[in-house]
Amino acid sequence: MSLKAIVTGGGSGIGLAAATLLAERGMKVACLDINPPGEPFIGVKVDVTDDAQVRAAVAEAAERLGGIDVLVNNAGIGALGTIEDNPDSEWQRVFDVNVLGMVRVARAALPYLRQSEHASIVNTCSIAATAGLPQRALYSATKGAVLSLTLAMAADHVREGIRVNCVNPGTADTPWVARLLDQADDPEGERAALNARQPMGRLVRAEEVAAAIAYLASPDAGATTGTALAVDGGMQGLRLRAS
Ligand code: NAD
Image (cartoon, rainbow, N blue to C red):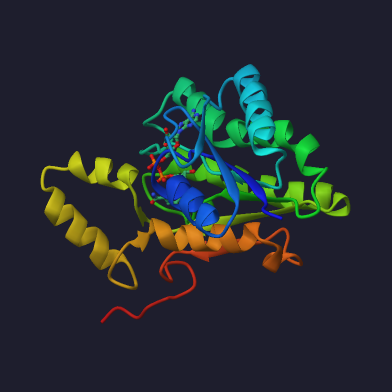
């Protein structure tokens, strides 16, 4: 029996890599995105900030897949700066996508997940949730909320047989990071400096985050709920001595 998965933000980067790997491993996959991908995925266009759109998109995906066993709650946007750099409206806009977006999709998916024997939610969080990164106050606060939400949902739904976990990627080589680097005066120099700041001397690959998502989403992780799996090249766990 093949499991059915929906992946938000499945049109690019980590979401597209996760959708690709889940499909390779035999799941039927629907990608929910403002810019959904085409074949071989079931693409459903949705803006996660619109609750009516989310309900309709999740219902459409469930109908076309024949149910939902797995939700990869991954759509998210970045934000740079300290608390003085962004007005309230920007805080509300980014929380609306990164936090409420995940709440809306999970709320719409829960009735379908309750019908599944292998129900699982994987939220894409970030090391920003706990790392204290400079110039990322707003973004970090949204990911702190995603981490807390993951733990609270894991507790609320454990007796219903729905597992809830998250992945915490470090800086991953996705179109989003490429866009940020392209805005720098010296993109190649910025990329080299970014690589040099990583313990492994390189960025995380989207496929490596996808592998962690696929594990948490699969019945192999059947006894795992309420965890955050770091996929960050050692950024959080290692404290390397300056040499
Ligand atoms: P990306 O920009 O390559 O992909 C994000 C996808 O989300 C896009 O396809 C976009 O269309 C979609 N999306 C954005 N807003 C949406 C909305 N309102 N409704 C529906 N879809 C929407 O970015 P990525 O790097 O793959 O990031 C994916 C997730 O990974 C995000 O939650 C991000 O916070 C998280 N993350 C990324 C990194 C990194 O370094 N790239 C690190 C840690 C966590």
